[in-house]
Amino acid sequence: MKLVAIVGTNADFSYNRILLQYMKWHFRMSADIEILEVKKLPPFNEDLPDKEQTEVWRFNTKINNADGVIIATPEYDHSIPAALKSGLEWLSFNRDIMKKKPVMIVGVSYGTQGTSRAQQQLRQMLLSPDLNSNVLPGNEVLIGNAAKVFDKNGFVTDINIVHNLENSFTAFNKFVKSNMRYLEEGDDNMTEPHISSDALIKFRTGSLSIKEIQQIFNTLPFEIDFIDANDNFAYFSDKPNREHVRHTAEIGEPVQQCHPPKVWPIVKGILDSFKLGTSDHVERCLPLNGHKVWINYFAVRDEFGKYLGTMEFTGNVGHLVSLVQEGKFDGFPDATTGASKHDDSDDSEEQSGPTPQVDATTGASEHDDESADKTE
Ligand SMILES: Cc1cc2nc3c(=O)[nH]c(=O)nc-3n(C[C@H](O)[C@H](O)[C@H](O)COP(=O)(O)O)c2cc1C
Image 1 (tube, rainbow, N blue to C red):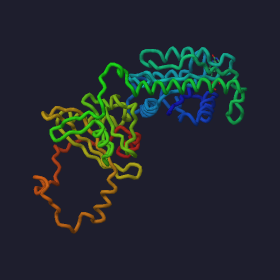
Image 2: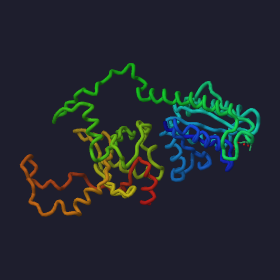
Image 3: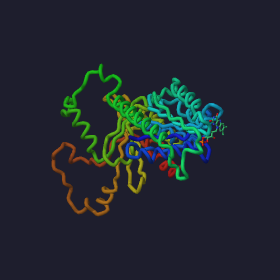
Image 4: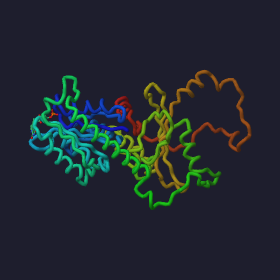
């Protein structure tokens, strides 16, 4: 289970941060908790230029890809700190990131009320239409007298607080898992007809079952992503060791949200050129994590040329390059077999359209920043 935990203050020293660090350690066997800082975000401003929103994009993406969110809020003047409010505004701004996301609220304060008023307000905010989160009901982690609760190493010293944390976290664990099951089974699992994975799809050139199609895509030595005609991220092949790491939480999201703001204009340029029909293929060679990565965007069209979406075809071609360098293709006669009508024609030229005048920097991945930095 992958969780993110938001430190709800921009203060350098924070008991709430210490609490989250303690939870990350204490619950390490049941959850992978990554701590996120609202202090890295710019203050919310809907007019902030896209190119200055890289941290916002990073923050949003991590939350989008998590199974659940823990928020640790201090109490400032009986409410939540402005820095946390600003972070929530970024999350709700034109996005569905927090929608149905399981959230657990915890809080530490100096006073005896243990952030109860701030937490009440935070619950209310998370239920607003633009955040619309699933807040864990019936559990409260209200820790007062902050200065006495932790020892100098950040361990909680009060056994009652530890028990309360464990009970609440167990409840949250179950809450997140039931949410994951719900997402896997789908909203309309009960009403939609079920299609068996043995069902055969008949193509002009043969038949394949749904299971075979899935496994062929997963077995290809190249990874495939598909962006639909409405620019939503629709599919990625489940190939092991992908160059571009994708998450199921991104499925159905506008593809813009899968890219850092500074890369998006380039990707949009490619998609627009496909939609306009001025281009059908964009190719890019990019070193990534020491691999020679070959990325191809292809316009996918129906038989009448109508745009159906974009396929991104990506793979590490290091092995192929080595084969060429080792002369594995040299010194043999052409091995034409006559197995196909095309074999004796020159098939080395790819039939692609005009080369688009657009930089093909890729793509929806954790490497995006890196590739953008290298190309700008
Ligand atoms: C501007 C401000 C307002 C505060 N208001 C409250 C409050 O309403 N209730 C409370 O219990 N503590 C209040 N405090 C004290 C906080 O509980 C204390 O600073 C706590 O350590 C904040 O959490 P942190 O250590 O994670 O930053 C306030 C502190 C600040 C700086």
